[in-house]
Length: 293
Ligand code: ADP
Ligand code: MG
Image 1 (cartoon, rainbow, N blue to C red):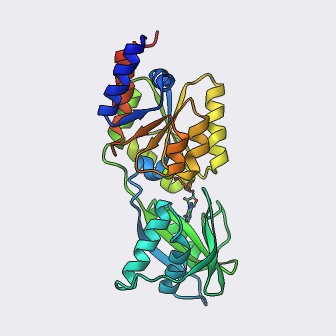
Image 2 (cartoon, protein in one colour):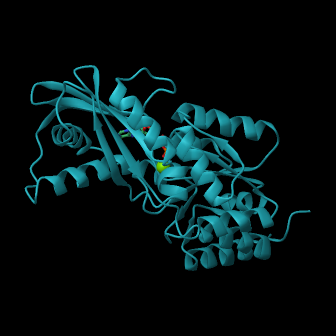
Image 3 (spheres, rainbow, N blue to C red):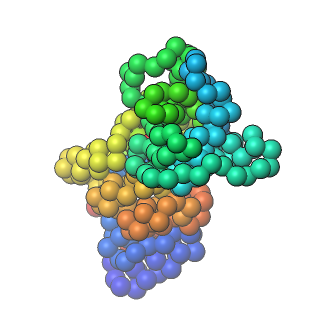
């Protein structure tokens, strides 16, 4: 394609809410044959809401567990953190002061931790067959049956609470997946979340290929393996946990509402909060830069 064609394509892309970094990205977009979707905040809205708080016997009650968890989540930009903080503030009846945290640490794809009121508090992902106190084990089962995302609250290294959070598909995700397939592109879901919510969302979105409980480095490895099969792989994500996968893809696409880490690692930013922008952009490049022979 000519330089003029690239100029026209990037201008049209901008009108569609697709900001493209350079002509090479446009050219690769035209050739994409596999799209790896992140789940939370990408296929889903990322506006999560707290569905359940369960506590282990003999420990602090649900309100206290939620307060401790929210205190450490204040420093998190993950949708789970925002949901937990919002729920705790609602419980506090407008008193928005949460306990102070020191030694805050966030690990992408894992969780957050810190010191709160003299206790070491951690909010993290559960392990696949983690032994848990009875009340938490039952709550985990119920949450998984409801396709909710589960996180464990540890106080002083002991599993003390379990939080279940729910999310919903973006309104256009299913249609976008369907259109992507119609363009001859295979959709794949790769998420750090557990199998139950991953498969539930994949089914709702119409995606068959699912990788769940995937750590950020593993996301990158999956992308590299797909590329090694000779595929041209686009990754769409929003989180700090997606940055490595976005950078290692043929084409990284960040959701406009996503983290700076994701946007910085991507070749394309989708400023329109609409998954169909991806489809529009691919169609546009095929139309203006010519179809693949
Ligand atoms: P996704 O791929 O769905 O965007 P992530 O890789 O960001 O998920 O996170 C994977 C898992 O790690 C989450 O499902 C959750 O269990 C845990 N996790 C990540 N960030 C947080 C956080 N701020 N608070 C609690 N748990 C978290
Ligand atoms: Mg995400």
